[in-house]
Image (cartoon, rainbow, N blue to C red; front, side, top):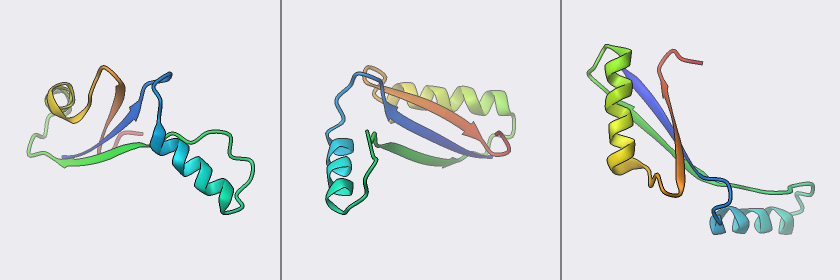
Length: 82
């Protein structure tokens, strides 16, 4: 089973990389960009076939290693989910 995890900074947390991207876009002539926030995308292939157990394992991975839950949010998407 394939899973995709999107990790983003929580609202209110400063995003210096996002700000640098925003400034660079402006310097390149891309107008109308009000704010840029950057994040991470992690793809994981699991041998688990049960979606509930896979999501539980992925949540545990995010809580323990993949995301800094003090400043980051994460969303888990299993293959076939919208």
